[in-house]
Amino acid sequence: DTEVTQTPKHLVMGMTNKKSLKCEQHMGHRAMYWYKQKAKKPPELMFVYSYEKLSINESVPSRFSPECPNSSLLNLHLHALQPEDSALYLCASSQGRGIRHGYTFGSGTRLTVV
Amino acid sequence: AQSVTQPDIHITVSEGASLELRCNYSYGATPYLFWYVQSPGQGLQLLLKYFSGDTLVQGIKGFEAEFKRSQSSFNLRKPSVHWSDAAEYFCAVGALRAGSYQLTFGKGTKLSVIP
Image (cartoon, rainbow over all chains, first blue to last red; front, side, top):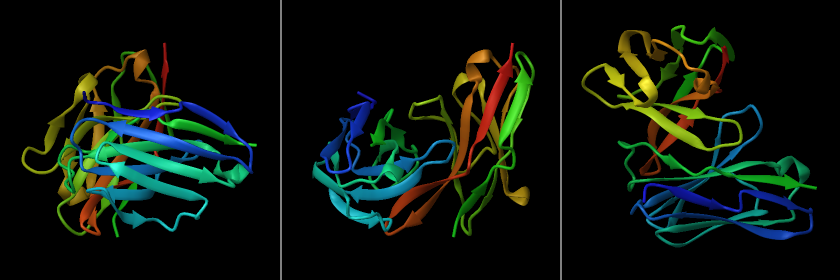
């Protein structure tokens, strides 16, 4: 299995809702990432998990809450989002802390906040 | 801090023509360089990567890139473009931070292909 699977593919949520994005990989990768991508922009790093521990939080608002329950799974919990949070949310993974094989990206969750 | 510049926002080529997408990087140490492609609404797919050794690297889908340290460049090339190559292309540099490597992306180049 050489894929990163993200669910759901599309999500529409109100500003008072609570929802979660899920990311799963079975490649044995020990680093996982959340990126946010606005239209016509490059991906921007949000969080880095290394060996199931949060190693980097790029000053992301607390309405985004990441969770890494095990080495294969990464969640992003969403609460009280704003319309400007609408974007494509990408999950990626890599082998340990290295980068020799680059990142493997999922196909993303298209989030719309109404 | 590391950075990547892709000078061309949008490039249009005819099908069958050659292609070169430019990328310049800034990084103090030996760079880890990547090219990714993204189709609309999709994730990113790795085309090729450079760490060391041969400065001309081959990737998937017939793409290649050449690393030129003197010019801080890592340009992507393809000898004959196919209509299916129309997509957004991102150059990225991998840099060590907080004990793990991270990717920093350029702003991307959108490729349009004329039949």
